[in-house]
Image 1 (tube, rainbow, N blue to C red):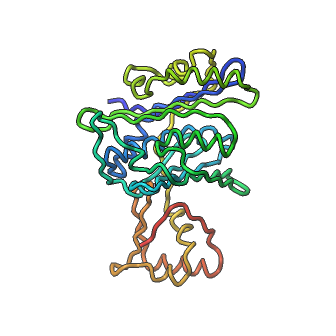
Image 2: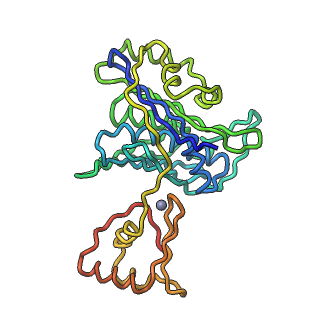
Image 3: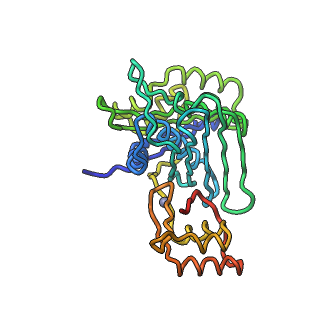
Length: 310
Ligand SMILES: [Zn+2]
């Protein structure tokens, strides 16, 4: 079997007023479900967020930039976190991946019920240098797509539409995922807003289009039939975690020297587990002592990107 990587295509209207992007994120969501053992409703919630985040990351202009999106609603799903790089690669996790919510009588998964319709969406944009941008807005719906669109509308004053979908077969095995994104560019006015609104009234579910064999470029054209689009670029994206022992060390440096020295369990090792990919790093007492010493001498650079030591 040929391994198909997820793919993003980005288009712009020939009049330069509207931008569209579409992603087939099947491979990304499949990997997230495999790593995190998510139930269908959580595959759906996390899958939608990862799909949207991948597109959002790919919109960052700086090469080393990344974007962390955290959705924390009042629902039983707990926090959902996605980190996207500017190349569109993405990783993430959910606080409660095993949450069981049965589908309704129409076989719809209640993502809003899992996430909660009230809560907070926060975004950290790290540009690779200088101060990161931090934004926070209330959740608009708990359905994820509306929430991400609302973020652009409120925090960046850019009218934006997201459609995100995660699909399952009859037996609730994950089958495919995808999304599309429409954004008005600064020169657009009321006429384009109305035109886009008219287009999106007729959008078919993205996963249905993927099932019908639409390529990502064809999805962009299908969601904006009233615009003439030209392809800006097309690239593969994947679920990717850049964790490494070096990152673990830097992350442990957020603790005090005394805490670092006493981290090891009875077996003589501190076990550090990556939230994003489940990689486990075992650090022995000698290495912990060296880390504590480096911390005392302020030779360790402190970063904290989602690590837990126990
Ligand atoms: Zn990792």
